[in-house]
Length: 328
Image 1 (cartoon, rainbow, N blue to C red):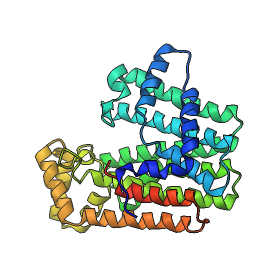
Image 2 (image 1 turned 90 degrees about the vertical axis):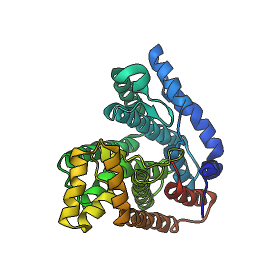
Image 3 (image 1 turned 120 degrees about the vertical axis):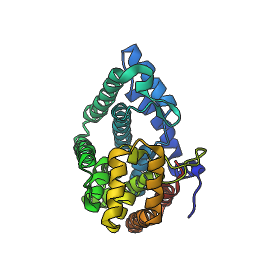
């Protein structure tokens, strides 16, 4: 099924009522007695993204039963954590825009941004504790550990430029797929699913998260919206993603040395970076990565086929398709 950007509203259809209620629930979970925090939190709420993680949590719950109060806790916990990590990422990357708007660190400086991220992380943990959702807390704590390890592993390997394909998949599982897997697992957990059902939906989230990250990695080599040119940001930051990893493994020593020299010494030179992007395309890096992404798409859909047909199941299938066909 081929989907358009607007399809998020179609995907949300089976949980439309719950998502509206969640907006109020999430806003309430972010409240603070500190005026500056409330100002910043209101800015965050008004510029929220597609809310893919709460959508995944609610759809996973609805796939197996009736949505409970526990499901709202799970959705808030994962969304608070996700928002906190985005704010911290912008500080680390010195990024001053997110989704076309100024980032928190651009408007309120890095110190405030780090503290806001810490506050949101603590609020997520408190939401779980106040509702005695200790099992949820365990799931999310594991995801936070994985995410931190993934980012640090990528940082370590970026310095050495020695990422293998196995290490790449380890990194993207940890930094991206682990949180998405926690959303689908928590959705199942919130409605009293069996261990087997939880594990299946966790695996579904892992496969979806890996496909999601590979799609993000492909954006770096593809034309972006009105810009009309690839961004090359990963190369500029010396991040080796699958298109480049594949090519470095399959070219001559001379070509590999040429490519690595650009990454090491000319990664800020737009012309050189564009040459490397074109080289990766010509040597099959994009096609290889797209094929791998489609493999993970298929793996995730195969898991959904084990569950009964329902509106929630159809929406999850559409979300998989959306993940690999999105343009942003």
